[in-house]
Amino acid sequence: MTTKTVSFSSAAVKFIFDAPLSHVEKLVAGNKAIFITDDNVYARHKARFKLFPTIVISAGEQHKQQATVDTIINQLVELGADRKTYLIGVGGGVVTDITGYVAGIFMRGVSFGFIPTTILAMVDAAIGGKNGIDVGLYKNMVGLTRQPAFILYDYTLLKTLPAEEWVNGFAEIIKHACIKDARLFAELKDNNIRFYQKDLSALAKLVQKNVSIKTKIVQADEFENGDRKLLNFGHTVGHAVETLYQIPHGHAISIGMGIACKLSAAINGFSQVKEVSVLLKQYGLPPQFEFDKEATFKLLSSDKKRINNEMNYILLQKIGKGVVHPITMDELKERLNNL
Ligand SMILES: NC(=O)c1ccc[n+]([C@@H]2O[C@H](COP(=O)([O-])OP(=O)(O)OC[C@H]3O[C@@H](n4cnc5c(N)ncnc54)[C@H](O)[C@@H]3O)[C@@H](O)[C@H]2O)c1
Image (cartoon, rainbow, N blue to C red; front, side, top):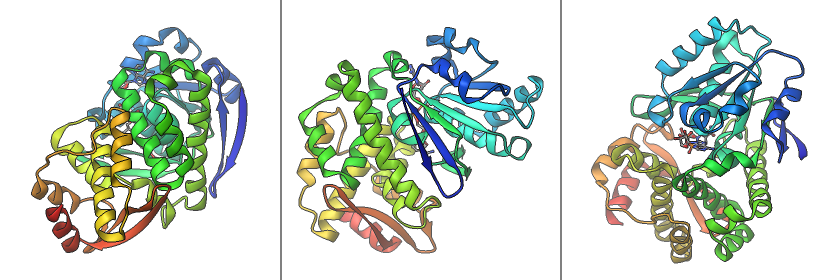
């Protein structure tokens, strides 16, 4: 077990790597705590939820909505939760996002921690303090920025993670490599998902490397005025096609990264489109997809990233160097049509 405390401008977060879930008892230091998880994680790891009362929500993005928040809050009241109660989200990004959001509004804010159980949540969703829910089709439309007290990594929870969720998680790992770390990109080229599934110590190192990439970006720009926007690489078109075609998140982000690479080539002279696309395929991800450009653009126009008639698009200068590129909606429409 290794512990690292990372200070953000608003709070310090304790990262506990390679620890058993049961270690959480020490982290809440005698306070009341309540687990929040989803029915998949609960069914596969029931025995681990004996420590504290557990609220189980239905699994899936379609439940990251206000109705689930209301259900959780009603159960918190029934369980006698008070202002000193810790809420601990054990699950993927849906559970961590909603737990952080409920913790931010319940009694005007209670302490919370995360035990991520997907690769995506370990390297991305649990980190950075963005918590929120979707409103209808609009992803993450409502939320707040607030840091958890701790994030605990128990890699044994990944034993039950379905194959497609490994693929989803690696889309974000490839994203990190593309925007910030050419060496990580090279490491990924030499391996594949099976390698990391078999070698837990290589996986642990990979997760920690990605945690460090994300925490550094967030530390430098907690409230997303600058560099934190880089984390949206692949997510602009990605979120739109995810909504339109109900394809897995990682696939959507991969398609978004493919588009962003092509736009980077057209706008920035980026010359490594092929390399990125080969790596995506190596990890079971599609770099291309035939999508309805008009419907996609319509959804982009309601994206939170749009301000007036402009949007910040994330492009690559080279592998390992992402850049924020302001683009007008008119130009974006034209460039997408020309792809
Ligand atoms: N807050 C942020 O900064 C941030 C960043 C990226 C993504 N997100 C959010 O994260 C969400 C996606 O997260 P996700 O991909 O983890 O999805 P998810 O939470 O829906 O989990 C994926 C599936 O895996 C199941 N699962 C989780 N852990 C398991 C385990 N160990 N064994 C078996 N099954 C398991 C879940 O029940 C679910 O069916 C999206 O809502 C996205 O908006 C948030």
